[in-house]
Image 1: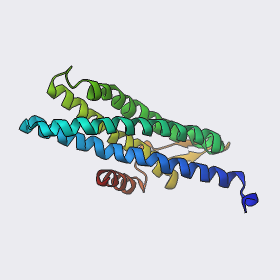
Image 2: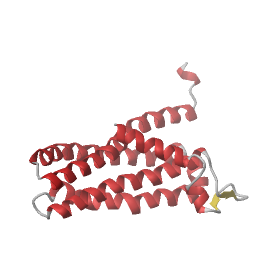
Image 3: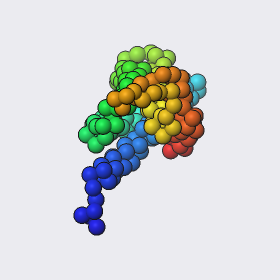
Length: 196
């Protein structure tokens, strides 16, 4: 049976394992970041130290899952180039900017304030620390927005044209970003993350 596996099937199996491993971490991170916002807000509102203690315990787990999500996400990016190089070449004009927006608007935002969130507990004011937690939680949602926009476009492509050379070019960014399946996928992912 293994002899009948061609390169495409093997690439699909490899990508399926990688994405199945990867999605555990962003889903957990999205939900946990918002939970950390609630914990810190309750601590600021009530002054009850139990909220701060629970926050400090969960923020360590958040840091590990965030790091694992980043590392496994980088592997996925490489697999786009190695396993699906023709698709990446042809759809790069559409997908490249979406993934670039994710890095510029979400990942840098999260990475910048993650340091304050992890190491700023006694170094910045409580309100500044809370703001950093809110920004990181917002960054996880923004990241999900861009990634799911790209993923949804691959399932229900819209707002592009195919040139004579086979390359895809965007014609309507709103249609690309808010394609037919995007709202359902985004709501599904965020809801699943909050239930995690």
